[in-house]
Structure formats: structure tokens, C-alpha cells
Length: 89
Image 1 (cartoon, rainbow, N blue to C red):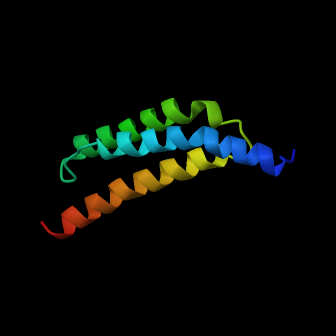
Image 2 (cartoon, rainbow, N blue to C red; image 1 turned 90 degrees about the vertical axis):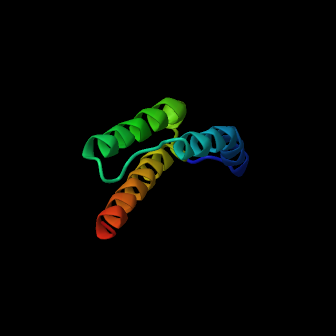
């Protein structure tokens, strides 16, 4: 199924406020990268927030793949902080 440029533009505009809120929620996630239970909780929080905020876009052919990519990026960011903290211990 292909979307017209107008449909794509509408979908992106629709997602813009959700993506801004997602950024705000992700910035609020605090954890201690040296405490495994804290890291696990941060991973779970990322998953919950993304699933909650982006649920309506999952079946969208344009925005659906973005959900998986964003989750991966945020989880990779947590992992990078863990690795960095362990290297400076």
C-alpha cells in the first residue's frame, strides 16, 4: 500500500507531538548504570513508554517501523552509558 505525499505529511504531523512527548519522557528516565536492577528497570521503562505513546502508530506502514527503531536507539543509549560507567570504575 502506497501513501500519497499528503497522507505521509499528515501522518508525520500527527506523530510530531507524540515524538516530542517521547523525548521528554525518555529524558526523565534515571538509572544507575552500575546497578543491574536499575538498568533493567530503565530498559523496562523505555519499553513501556514507547509501547504506550507509539501504540497507535504500530500498524502504520510509514511510522510503524519507527517504533522499533526508536526503541532500539534508546536501549542502545542505556547500554552505552553502562559500558562507559564500567570503563571508568
